[in-house]
Length: 255
Image 1 (tube, rainbow, N blue to C red):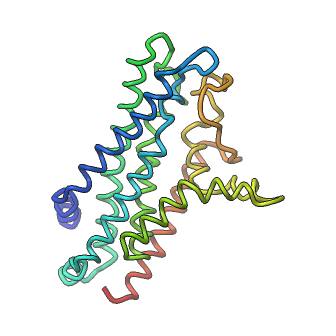
Image 2 (cartoon, rainbow, N blue to C red):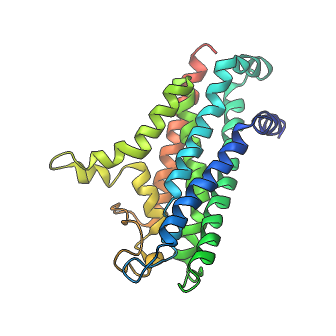
C-alpha cells in the first residue's frame, strides 16, 4: 500500500495526468459531437455511435502511460526509486497499477461524457443503456484504457525514451494494425488477432449496441473470431505478458 501511495503522489503531482484527462474527454467528446450531431435516418445515432471517438482518447492514455515511465528515466528519478525500493518488480508493479487505475477512471469519464453529450445532441434517438451490450460498449471503454495503459508502461520501460516510446505506441495503435490488412492473402487473418482489433470486439460484440447493425449505425465491427469475454481475456493476456517482459528486462539492466 505504501508503494501505491508513493506512486500515486508522484503521478498526480505532475500536470500530465490532468492534461491527458482533459484531452481525452475533449477529443473523444468532440469527435462524437461531430458524428452524433449530424445523425440522420441514413446514419442514425446509436449507443455505439456515442463512442465513435474512443480511439482518440485511447491514444492520449497510451501517451500518459509511456510518459509515466520515460520521464523518470529522463530526469533520473528512477534511480532514486530503485535505491529506495531495491525490489524493482514491486516498485514497477505499483507504478503500473496506479497508472492503470487512473486510465480506468479517465476512460469511464470519457465514455460517459461522450454518451451524455450524445443524449443532449440527439434526444430523438434511443441511446439508453437498455442491454448488457450497450453497457459494455460504454463502461467497457475504461477497462480497455486501463489495459492499454499497462501496455504503454511496458513499452516505456523497454524503450526508456519519451519520443521513441510515444511514437512507437501511436504509430502502432493508429496505423500498423489497419495496414496489416493490406498484406496479400493472409493480412486479414493476421488482423483478426491484432490486440486493439480484439479489444474492440470486447466493446462492440456482435453489434447489438449499433441497433442490430443497422446500416451506417456505427463503426465497422471487429473481425475477431473471439467472443467478447475471450476478447477481453486475450487483450489482458497480451498486456500482462508485455509487462512481464518489460519488468524482467528492467531488472537485468542498469537504471
